[in-house]
Amino acid sequence: MKDTPDAPKEAKKELEKLGPLSLDEKITAGAFAVTVGLWIFGGSIGINAVAAALLGLSILLITNVVKWKDCLSKSCLLTHAKMTSL
Image (cartoon, rainbow, N blue to C red; front, side, top):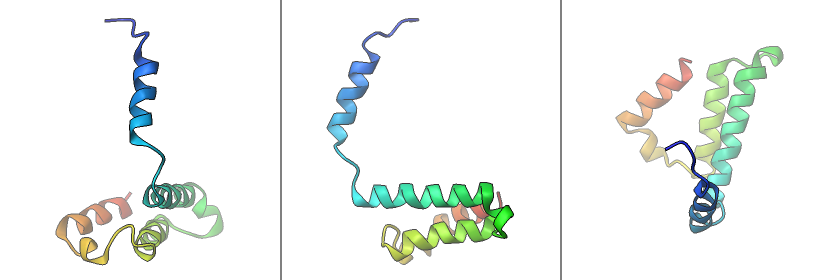
């Protein structure tokens, strides 16, 4: 299969089924943008990658997108450890 002319129409239909972004999704996108921005440009303003990752996590915790109880689980801690080591 080399040609998929119906793909854009199908994709649009699927996106319409999902509906608009929820508040949690918007907050997550914002926290991600801040974190990535600080990973890229933080060195020039004295913010290292670990501080950027902690800020992103803090935004998610303060806004209750991620619950502290979830963060205490082993998988969350391992994921955060992996992300801060980048």
